[in-house]
Image 1: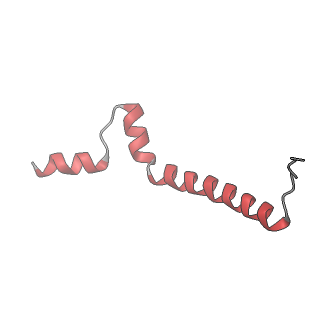
Image 2 (image 1 turned 180 degrees about the vertical axis):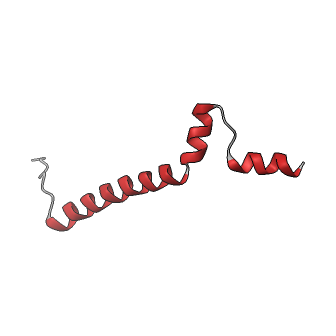
Image 3 (image 1 turned 90 degrees about the vertical axis):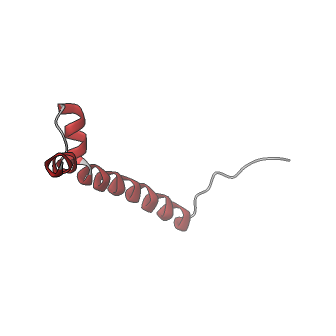
Length: 57
């Protein structure tokens, strides 16, 4: 007799919720930290790091 019990105990459920929240917050932090590079990519502008490199040359 082969059957599976689809049961998520409270510990596993809270871990799953915690992992989802961490993934959402991590993605939000990455987007916030990379916002200037994202805008420069879609807007055709140079990022601050590229501008500083050109000023040194």
